[in-house]
Length: 323
Ligand SMILES: Cc1ncc(COP(=O)(O)O)c(C=O)c1O
Image (cartoon, rainbow, N blue to C red; front, side, top):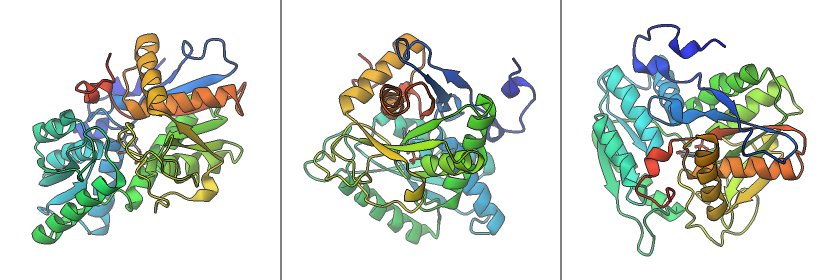
């Protein structure tokens, strides 16, 4: 098999973003009827899928003139978008300020700092717990990001609204899934933060084959997109499940169903993924694979389900994800 990643010398590490491998999880699916195809996004340079949107948002903004040479870039991040932006901004010579909740694992802030970012840590709300970033915690980070943008006349990457977030997955991740699988995908499920990955992939997949069913994955007890009450907003699945009832990038018409995954199931599946498949992903990767397993047991029996391994388990070494 050819390996496109090693075929040529890239001009910079930014060109090494994307074209991640697609791997069948044949050990985890033993005894089940159907296949799970996992896209290993942790093999991107910043160890997450968010490198893709960092590149797209910056390049789109350069192209339309909203980002000018020497301007500072600011973003609210749970760490992964910030790491992607730190990489892209260091290569392209922009100063980058990452605004992050103290509720995220400390590895993330340290990695961004190592990549040259200025990291601004924002306290959680009274009563919030480290490792559990709520919508209210995120609102505090948003206010601080807005203040810094005003103060410095900066460019706000704005991943919750930027078309580049959608376009990165519409132009690349989705088409890669189709090409690498030879079009043999029946369903796609994705744990939603901004909804950029879900929306971009779902648009690309359905445009090619409208029969592909796309499922939104949410934390159990925080499934507001599915119309449920938020009884447990302080879940453990970092990077999403922010209890926002609508997301600018997410079109409900693309959603064929909703799946809820508990913290325990996300974590247990991430551990199985590491021990049985040798794939070390974070909590949300565990949630995506847990959802894909659930689909094979229920409405997608006998089918092929695609799932994203969003980031690396290395980003969670300080948590109890690792036994
Ligand atoms: C680890 C992780 N998983 C899942 C997501 C959700 O992805 P999206 O924002 O594309 O919905 C994010 C987003 O930051 C993330 O960092």
